[in-house]
Image 1 (spheres, one colour):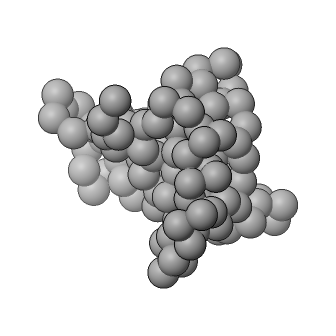
Image 2: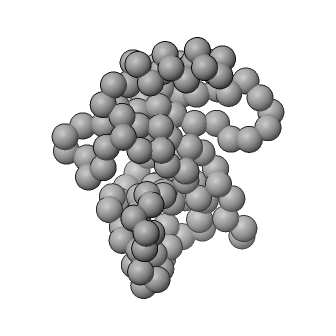
Image 3: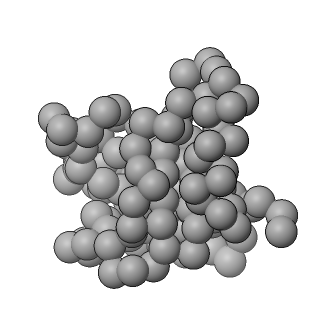
Length: 118
């Protein structure tokens, strides 16, 4: 299987102001979802959709923009991240509503990315 970018996430401590900013700037339709933060509909058939989420003090990272890469085996992919010089910083763990499993990692330069297995 190829590994496409499947979704993006914008996260920060001021969730409401992020929703207002991106909604007004790009005319995105942003809908509150209790389980997944705020679902973004970019109102386009092109590209990918995303979420805006609130960060907390318990999270290992704050104020980030992340894209998630689809993988067949998230456990194997997480091990591969570590063996190639990256570091898994969250997960693998289930996505709310049972839509799949995700993990977050840093690459050797410290960039944060995500893995997603449906």
